[in-house]
Length: 192
Image 1 (cartoon, one colour):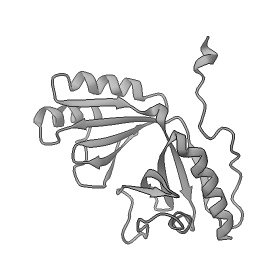
Image 2: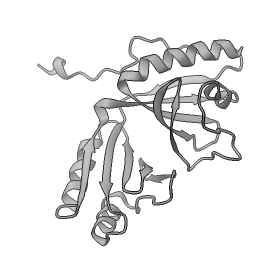
Image 3: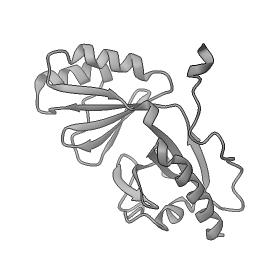
Image 4: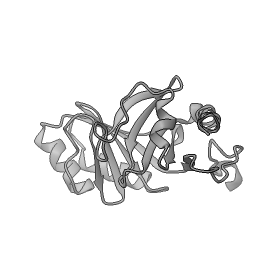
């Protein structure tokens, strides 16, 4: 019976080899947890509950990312955040948030089965993404600690520079993951 619930990456059938030359490295960060959090950031009960569970206040500045222990919190809108957890930790965090937010106008939804993350890193990572992303990816404009909801090759994504500035993390809907990864691999070959 347990085989029915075996987790499988949306990119399980795509081979991710070593990049050639100075081509960007493309790798999936599979099985992270993804919680969508909604609430009123000015409400003291919401702020207190988030602080109690996450250890930080959710970011209120537009297009920012905040590290909170093992979790990353992405600002998606004035009352919406995406919390990325390490694999397998989303259910426990969801329960803690729901308990702390009881009676507070809010929602916590587990979107883990619908999203995945791809890291694109290396000195040409920005160049690769810029081939079909309308967002300005230059380091003077888009820096670690920021995020943006944009598109790449016609697929919607949440994008953020890696903390070390050596690439980007791309959060994509699971149903677009194989398309986007194949597109990235083809576009990387075209860079050579």
